[in-house]
Structure formats: C-alpha cells, structure tokens
Image (tube, rainbow, N blue to C red):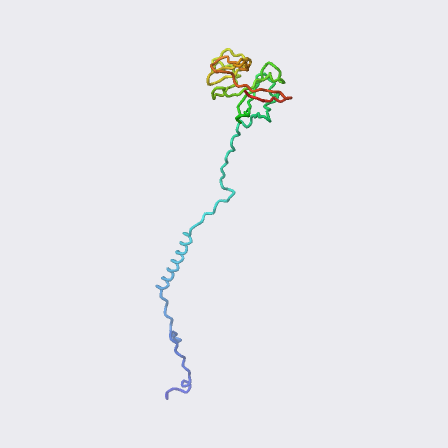
Length: 229
C-alpha cells in the first residue's frame, strides 16, 4: 500500500463476474458435434411429421346422388284379354255392324257366364248370307270345345285345312278342333237330340256336337251377345 501512488490508491476495481472474462479474455469456440446432433434431430422430426401426414387415412367422398346408376324396370306387357270386349248382362255389346260388314270377318270377345261368373272366350263370324243389320247374318260361339279343354280355331287359310286337318273339300272358312282334327261348317245346321237346331255341323271328325252357340241381337248399330247355350 505504501508503494501505490495516490491516483492508483483511489481507483475502483471492476467486480469479477463468473463466466465473464476480462477485457482481454476470448470466448471459447462452440462444440461442432452438438450442432450436428441438433441438425440431425431437426431433420428427423421433419421427416417423421411428413410421413405421418402422407399416411393419414383418406375418406372417399360419396358419389353425388344425381349420378347414381338407375335400373330401368320395363313395364309389364298389357294382358291381351283386357283389350277384348267383355259381354255382361248389363253391358252386352261386343262389336258394331260397320266393323263386321265384310263377309267372313270375325272378332274375338269374352262372354260372362251369369251362373259361374267365368269369362268364356268366344268368337263372332259374319256369315256371307243375311244382312249385317240382322242377327241371322252372324254366328257366335264359345271357343272352348264342349267336351274337353281344346281351344277351337277359326280357319280362314284353306291350305291349313288341307295340310293340318286333311280336309280337302273346303271352299270357305271353317272352324276346327286342333286336338281331334274335327271340322265344323259355319254354313250348315244340324239337329241335336230334343229337336234343337244349331249351327256348325260336323263335316269331319269325332266330336260329339258343334261348338256351344251364343245368341246374338242387333240394337241399332251395335251387336249384342245376350245368351249362351
């Protein structure tokens, strides 16, 4: 203390702070290995987050409602029987005289059996003799065979009568039973037991009687089916 000058004696000393060097001290250099580890960890974190984002579950969007495929269901075919006249007690009309004016013209219809309620398939034929405005100008009959389940057919093709029925003497349309090959002549009458005359005499075959007849009446220009045998 005795050797210090007065100026040095009153000069304050700088406090010593741990970790802080003096004016002439140098900072130690950073650790390169630590920086490398930190960089690698950052890269790994980025890769991990990117992989999780890429593998996240994806929900497919439902197709728009207006693009859904539609199956077209065809409408059922109309029942042919509904297109034919149905003669009943209160509505017996089956045809008009104008549509049946041509000889040998025909038309199918159904006749309602008042006792059983069944609709019987039937046919009306315009005969070449008689007037279209008179009932005797027509022949109407049930198309079911009187004894059996065969459907009678109206044969206007004379070649078919020869080839399928073996009937070679036809010169006008006939009615045939395809099961027994019986042929009925619309122009001929026959007498049944009880002195009952009916149309459609048998000219070939083994059937017991002609088709069941249906009574026809003319009312103005309408043809009515009013009663069956």
